[in-house]
Image 1 (cartoon, rainbow, N blue to C red):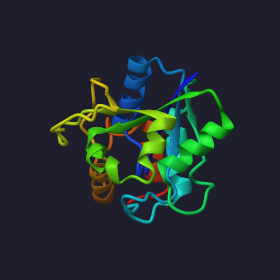
Image 2 (tube, helix red, strand yellow):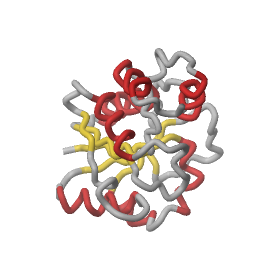
Image 3 (cartoon, one colour):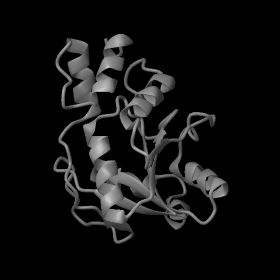
Image 4 (cartoon, helix red, strand yellow):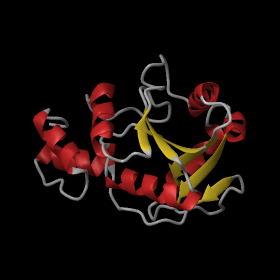
Amino acid sequence: MKVGVLGGTFNPVHMGHLQLAAGAVAALGLDQVLWIPARLPPHKPVDGPVSAEHRCRMVELAIAGVPAYRVSRVELDRPGPSYTVDTLRELTRQQPGTAWYVLVGSDMLADLPGWRAIDEAMRLATFAAVPRPDAPVAAWPPTVRRLDIPTVPVSSSEIRDRARRGGPLEGLVPDAVGRYLLEHRLYR
């Protein structure tokens, strides 16, 4: 079984995340994508007071109805920072024999050498990255698969700013996520 690992703060989840997952399924022949909300990301703070439970619920709403997508609480239920290598160790323990693919944007590539136990993480999974126009890569790492798939130019920070101002979110987040943001007054 080939499974993509799509981790992030998902603060909030948006159409760019969904496009990345769909493109990775097609390009890599993935059987499933595990969406893994980070409890405590080690590389950046979670912007604003939105709880991990709200972020997880938004992911659940965003992927509802897509059989190949599943939410994992592996990082939410573990204390401490959400290191990718710890997540891959746990996933490998739970599902031995699975071929894991860590899905990232090219903006993360410059930081990979500083990730905790990156060599072990790259033994446990294939890393696959999508080029982003705002994050050009001077030299593509030979250990990372390049995914040339369509992307949606949207960011979570842009969505949070719009939500704070009461601006429209149509086309940026799934409708169910937009309704959830309004109902729970997130980012206000």
